[in-house]
Amino acid sequence: MSNKELYSPEGLRLDGRRWNELKSFTCKVNTHQTSSDGSSYVQQGNTKVMCKVNGPLEPKSKANSNNNNASITVNLNIASFSPVERRKRPKSDRRIKEMMTILEKTFSETVITKLYPRTQIIVDCYVLSQDGGILSAVANSVTLALIDAGIAMYDFVSSINVGLYNNSIPILDLNHLEEGDMSFLTLGIVGKSEKLAMMLLEEKIPFDKLETLLGIGISGAQRIKDLMDEELRKHGKLLISTAAS
Amino acid sequence: MEIITISKFNNNKGLNDEDEEMEDVSNNDQIVTPGELITEDTVWMRGHGTFALGNKTYSSVAGTILKVNKLLSVKPLKGRYTPETGDHIIGRVIEVGNRRWKVDIGARSDAVLLLGSVNLPGGILRRKSDTDELTMRNMLKEGDLLNCEVQSLFQDGSASLHTRSLKYGKLKNGIFLSVPRSLIIRSKNHSFVLQGNVSIILGVNGYIWIYKTPTVDNRLKTDSTASTASKLQSGVMGRQSGYQVGSGSVSLTRLEEESSWEIYSDKNDENISDAIRSNIIRYRNAIQALAHSQIGINESRINMAYEASMAYGSLGSLTEPEVMENISNDVLNGEKMRGS
View 1 (cartoon, rainbow over the protein chains, first blue to last red):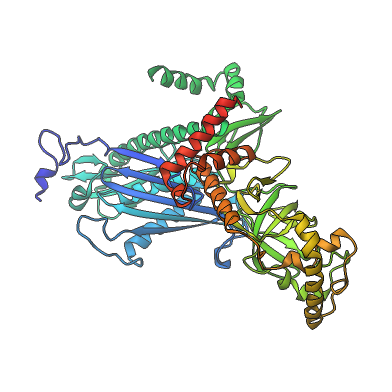
View 2 (tube, chains in turn orange, brown; view 1 turned 180 degrees about the vertical axis):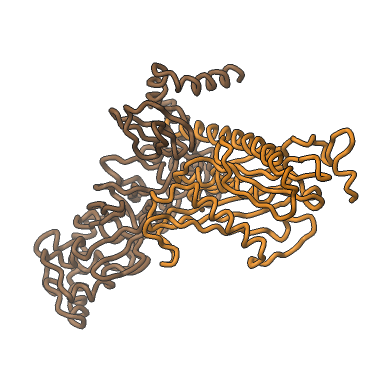
C-alpha cells in the first residue's frame, strides 16, 4: 500500500471518511450481568472490545491489598482471531503488558480509590476484533464497565487516536491500515475537559505538530464521551422504568 | 425527539439558576453520570456518590439524585451489596479462622462471624471455650452456606454477622441462586413458605436459597427419636474431641431440641421426593427469568412466575432466553391486570 492512497486529493480516506470523522461508535453496558458487577461492549468501526469489572472485592492475595486505596488490576486478552491475519500473542507480550500498565495507572487516578480501602477491582478486557485504536477502544469500554459497576469515579475517561499523514495532515481515529503507515498518538481525556488522563506515543511526531494533533484528539474524545454518556442515560432510564413497574 | 433533547439541554443550563436548581435536585428520576455538575449551591451537604471541587458538587456514579433534608447523595443504579445492621442475608464460609469464620456475602469485603455469635449445638448458653474453638470446623467449614443477620458494622463498612436465632444457621436441603442484589428490596420478612412444599430465603445481598419446607410434625414424630439417637452418637463423637455439655442428654426445651448437632449436619433429609426436587428447580428457573428481565423479586412475583412457568412442561426449557422473557412478561401483565 503506497502512502498516497491513504488520503486522496479530494480529502477522502480509504474507508470514505474525511480527516476529522470518527469510526461508527456503538456501545452497550451491562452485557454480562450474571458474571460480573459491571460490563460493557464497545464497537468502534471494526474494532470490537468487551470488558468486565469485578469489585471492589476482598483482594485475592495480600500483595494486592493497600490500606488506603483500592488496587486496580487490568487483564487484557487479545484474541488470536482478532487481527486480519490470525496471530497468537502471548500474554507476556511487551506491548500488551505496556497497555495493561497504562490502563491501570490511568484508572487508578480516575477512580476514587480512597473510598474503597483494602479492596481490589479486577478489570478483564477482551479484544474480539481489531481494526486500529485497540487501546482507545479498551479504555472506553473500561470506563463504561466501571461506571456500570457503580464504582465512584471523578469523571469519564474517553479515548481516541490521532495520526499525522505526510507530516502535515492530522487524521482522526485511524483504522489498522492507517495505523501501519503513519505515526500516531493515543490519548484519553477526563470528561469534557481538555485534561489528559492518558497518552501513548510510540513513534516520532514533529514537536510543532503535536499541539494540533492534541487539539483534534481532544475534540474527538469529547464526542466519544457524549456518545457514551447518552448510552448510559438510556440504560439508566430503562433500569429505572423496569424497577418501578 | 427534538423536543426532548432541547428540554434536556435547558435542564442542564438551568442548574446555574437557583430557582430551577432546587427543582432539578428534587427530581428523583433524573439520571446523573460521573463528573456531572449537580449543584453550585453550598447549602447542600455532600453524601455518597458525590464529590466536591471548590463550591461545586459533582456526581461520582451513574444514578439518581436522592436528597434527604439538606443531604445530597447519588444513589447508584447498580453496585455491590453494602451491609446494614439487621439485614437478613445468606453467606458462604470461605475461611475458618481464629475464633471466627470469614464469610463471603457479596460485599466489598468479607464479613466475620464470631464464634460467640453462633448457637452452640445443644443450645446451651455459655461462654465459648477453647474446646469450642477446636470444634469450629464441625459446625461450619469452608464452602458451607449459612443464613444469618448483620449484627453490626465495623468502621470500614465490613459486617459482623450472627446466627443467634432458630431461623438462622446452616443451610441444607436446597439450591443456591445468586441474582443482582438491586432486585431484592429490604423488607420486614425475607423468608417465605411457597406452594409445592418449597420454602425460600431471599437474602438482601442477592443470594437466594430455595429449599424443602422443613416439616414440623416430621420433626416431632420421627426426629425426636432420631435426634436422640444421633445426639447420643454425637455425644460419643464429641467425647473424642472433648466433652460437649448437653450433647449426650435428651433435650427439654425447644431451643435445645432444635439446636442439637442436627443443625450443623451436612446430610440432606432422606425423604426429598422427586416432585419437591423439580419444584425447587422450577422456582429457581422462574426467579432466574425474573432476574433476566431485571424485575424486582418478591413473594407474589415468584408465585406468579412459578405459575407462568407451568405452561412449559420441561424444566430445561425454562432457561431459554425467549421463555424467560415470556415468563417475565406474563408476570408484568398479570400485575397490570390486578392493578397492583
